[in-house]
Each structure stands twice: as C-alpha cells, then as structure tokens.
Image (spheres, rainbow, N blue to C red):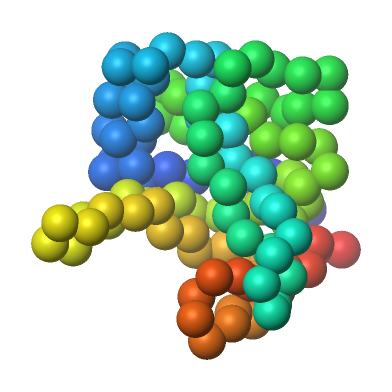
Length: 113
C-alpha cells in the first residue's frame, strides 16, 4: 500500500499558515509541471478552490490540494521550508523521485506501483 499523504515540516506548515493568513485561499496546492531535462518541476501555490479532480489531504491542520493525476507521483512527499541567508524556498523529499537534473530545475519521478 502506498503512503498517499503529503507531510509538511513544522517550518513549511508555519510558512503556509502565514501565506493563508495574508492572502486567503482554500489551502495549499501542490502540483507538478513538465519542464527541464529531467521532466518535472514542483509547483507550490495557494489553492483558490478545490476542483472535482482534486484530492484534499491534511497535515498540521492545513488543507493540501493535489490533483488526482499527480497524487501518485507526490505520494509520501515531505515538504520543508528552508531559509539560507536572504533566500528562502520550499524543498521536497519525494520517495518517487528517481533522478534530478544538475541545475536543480527538475526531477524524474515515477509513480509507485
């Protein structure tokens, strides 16, 4: 059985709570888009609504909206929020990632069977 949950670190959950308090929204949307040399890039944005093709997961009391088509590729992913100097970013630890490009723009992902 596959772990279909998405896990937020405390730092990621705190940052998402800040975004939702400032801008509103239905929750955090996680997605993938085709790009780069390895194939997929992570997309993090505030969900304006939950669509018919979405699954809704919860972690740290935060609604996480993921399209059913990409959920198998994101299943079990841990999302962290990291600050380094003046830069900050969400980072992903995805058990389904099989490779990453050298520039860090994209990852190869296979859905678990």
